[in-house]
Length: 375
Image (cartoon, rainbow, N blue to C red; front, side, top):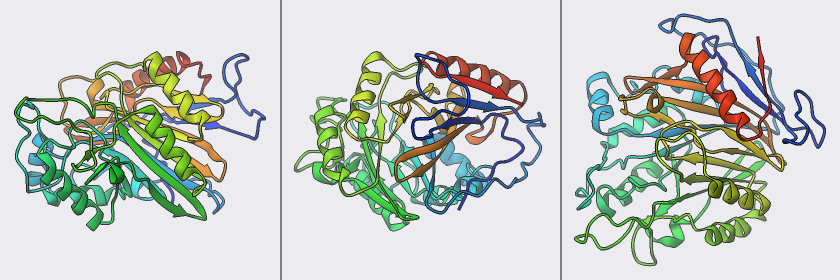
């Protein structure tokens, strides 16, 4: 299955890798890859998108669609009750579902059990029916390694895992104990075996003396996989020989900033040096630039995808990453910006797409990314 490219998609970021040779724009001394931004004709934002066929790719490739943060509670939950479970992904869900594998960071437990975590001011919990929204988008894997996994305590986390897996959606980054939280999800598609791992840099936050434990899973307690470099390297080495590719999702960084820190970049480089093929970043709620290191792709933050943070433009923006993978890693990648209109993502258009185009160019250039705009 493939991701449909629609005329409404006004920006396409393409990363090309060709066995050491470069096709496209090259900046000496930067990185050996190129980024191509395609600008399509401007259309009205209210015009229903029409599918457009794309060039077929060989069967030995896998299309991975990855999006940013998804939260199905609070105001989003009320919209689901009013407008139906298909509301958030009515525009983009069918296209996402055409990918071979679709991935997201799920920021809200989906459960009926549990109580709000004592001392935590913002606690999310979506109703089990919200899973229908994820199914519309064809989501195959979600990360639960984030600071909202235990919003309604251990019972809700365990129910969330049960609800998701029972609906055919695999979970990484959280579990009934630390062993299961760090366990990879392995998917074989088109003859390619891909491992997904997920970790949170906020696993050790304590919210109240009444609740004397963090989000980190332990030998005896449910929780999330902590973003500890040596642990991640251990997990990568353990799974590397079982699969062709390793994808790592990292819930990291600082909220509401558009650039990764030096420490984040150094960690990403180390993970790639040890065998990771693709890094997907989450948590800042703002989109950040992409970088290639040793012909591997790093998406530092895909921003928001389904959320109700309507108080700023930046929190209503995100990226859809489409990566074409083969046995050697990322063969090509495209990224398309989205704008969240009343918790419903849609392709960015008109002046907004012009703004995002300039923003992406700038953010990628700060990460030594060569960019060319087509069209």
